[in-house]
Image 1 (cartoon, helix red, strand yellow):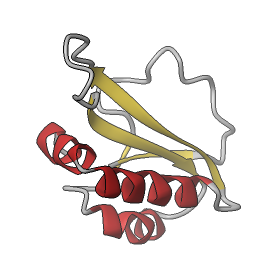
Image 2 (cartoon, helix red, strand yellow):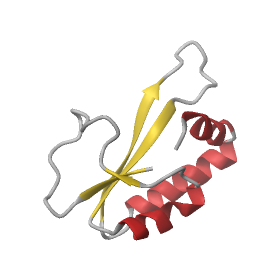
Image 3 (cartoon, rainbow, N blue to C red):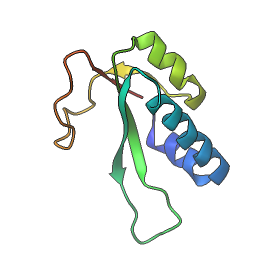
Image 4 (tube, rainbow, N blue to C red):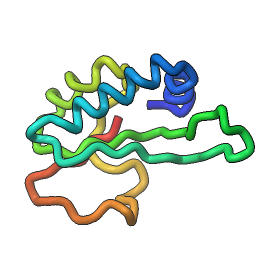
Length: 103
């Protein structure tokens, strides 16, 4: 998902709540370990600007096709397996059956 797309989604409150709702629905699935949004930039001088993100991570034992179906309403540019730039230090070791997908 591009920064511009996520920022555009988050500029509109109703779209933001739809985005948040969908991510929470995904997180609530029985086979999802967690969902994390990687924040790349925060504009502290402008409290009306949402943080910028280029990646949403879904940790699950589901297949790529299942994750793509769950995320379809968010219109990601792609659903890929793995981290964009290596595992962030805040992400602890995952169970062996859990895969990392990136939107």
